[in-house]
Image 1 (tube, rainbow, N blue to C red):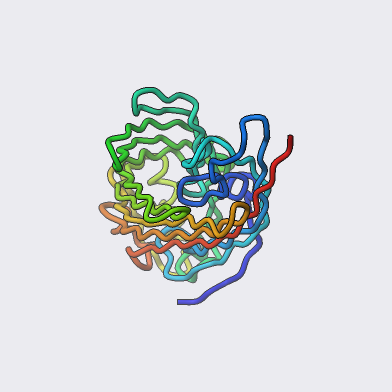
Image 2 (cartoon, rainbow, N blue to C red):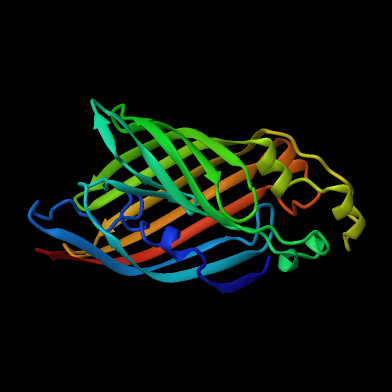
Length: 269
């Protein structure tokens, strides 16, 4: 395993909402209605170089984000391609649009990718539905890439469990799975005959079809150090399954992601 520090790409999507989420939020929910709150700070995220990589990159960037919507935050960060805005809420049911960024893949990310060409990342848009059942909140979300390469879409479904462990300390656990369509699987896990012929590693032709590509479990903590300062920690383990796990580009089925952030919130009347 090796580590590489890279500049943050897609910072408007990854960073702008990170600290406004239930997991990573600078929003303590105590700002008066007459005030507009902003959160400023920094975030560092460790993530695989590409989906299936055994090597990791570190993405770090500053951010500026609105901070509003109560203790959970109207803006929720679930991942780089899953920044949700709670537009509608009634009787425990909530729904809204989402946006984010899907990181691409460069052929120099690993020796086995040489000759396969780059895959461009891009803007992701979609929507989500969730329902609160006590501390549990089952959800389903859809994410489709609309810029860069035609990366297709994925659907995630799972459950969040949210606890207030102590005053100013909120813990969120998540478990779920991801379904990917044919376009996504072809872009990120298939090897075309032309790519196989150009592969420096001699990869065989491989066609990945739509299906459940991974299962995941994660945990995060929001710790309000003071009324203004908030420490945020998150981690997720993802296990590739099915055609994704069997792809010749995959170095390991085990994928880890972690994040650490610190935010400062201030009010503007």
